[in-house]
Length: 371
Image (cartoon, rainbow, N blue to C red; front, side, top):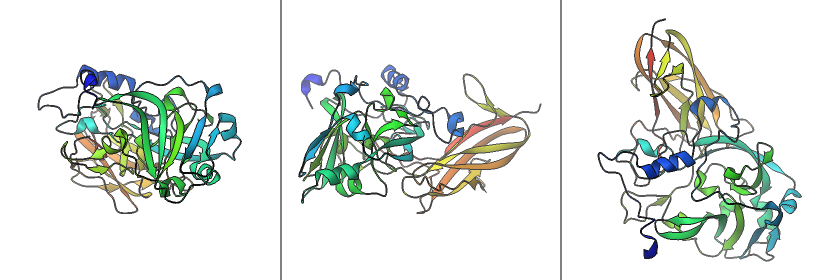
């Protein structure tokens, strides 16, 4: 840590027992927004509704002078402008992207950071060039183990001045399941500034920290990357002095479109008696979602929902739907997903210091009132 920066950038910490959301966290929440849950109805999320997490500033990138350098342990390093990338055959993947810290604000004790509830998610159609095509063309040399990606965003985090950098293992970077994209379009249009214009990385199945925005450099290395965002941040650890395990693929999660109508301030849901359709989306970065269950009594009993297939879009969320018979009184609706590899959302969330990978089941309090 640069000691001269300690006054503006402190170490990571956990909130005290009675500590509320700070003005710093509120400022983060104002800059970084989640998906309004009623907009789970969109199969493909409009860019302005897709969740956003920006670590530093949205950089001002002039596309006319922008280049992507691809080098390191390769035979023929290259620099590609946007026209050169667009000259490749375009590939489009529909991908559900979720922030690794989604659900952090629900943990106790609460890790102090971006205070996500459960809305840090979105699904878009990303168009670009498969990373493996670019790496094949430059020729990865023997001995390579990782590929490091550098964004144009620059800042300070926990006393470390840095460009945003992340890496992927070479087999993931070269793989086709999933196929990593160097993307220049979102839902058929150029990337919006907050989503990485002019080019970003898209890593299907991985949490959002791997999808480096404002991408400007790709470097193949013969040693594992040990930069801040890889070895300090985005680690699942119980204490500050342990190395922890890296955050990688998205844990299974189901979310519900809040039924009925809300109170303005509390967001408490209100419905009338009778049949109430419950619907939402479910996803996993490990395997297709196989089952979604819904409970109307806080997890005491469960009903299987109808789950739509993810045919043609293995890395996108699946729709689910079930009918609930609402009766007057207070209810707690709960939904959980299970993927094809048997991973299921927990009813009680294991805690970790960074608040990462929190896929605790969603619970939606509902008041049913007679007309």
